[in-house]
Length: 203
Image 1 (cartoon, rainbow, N blue to C red):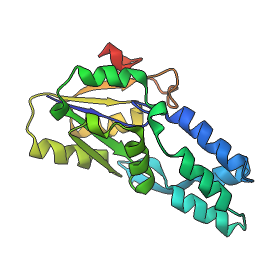
Image 2 (image 1 turned 120 degrees about the vertical axis):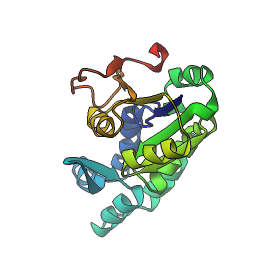
Image 3 (image 1 turned 45 degrees about the vertical axis):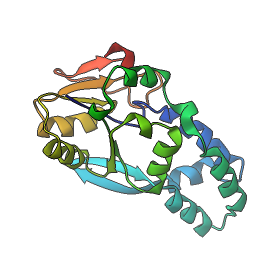
């Protein structure tokens, strides 16, 4: 068995993190409008679906290009981005105890230094035998499966659009759509054939 978990909103409270993250920008002179306009760095198209990516370095560069001072902002962000374990959902730690570490894999959409920093500072690396980040989850999962043969594959993710793309390529996998109260993508209905859960404790 191999269990592949998503990061944002699955094991990491990204909604809460983003609210606290935004507050640092706002108190350093970056308006809500400017934050929104500079937030996404690029759009990725996968099987007729559009996924947006974020990169902190690119956002800061865009803000500087608007003539805003970022020195104090960057100093505050450097402190804030240390020790992000406070944003990891508590049920993840109990969940991880129930399985062999060799069977747990983390596959997260989005590449770059910021995503790697979030994962590292969250403190969850030690619970996984492998961590992959990138623009194409299907490709990342395929790399794992080709190398480590398994008779059972579980996929745990919060986003239906990501799950649908993955399910097309791995139809025999067992899918769990985690729909947390704090999730950012709760409006989408869970399709048939995908088990909906409210927390990792249900598994």
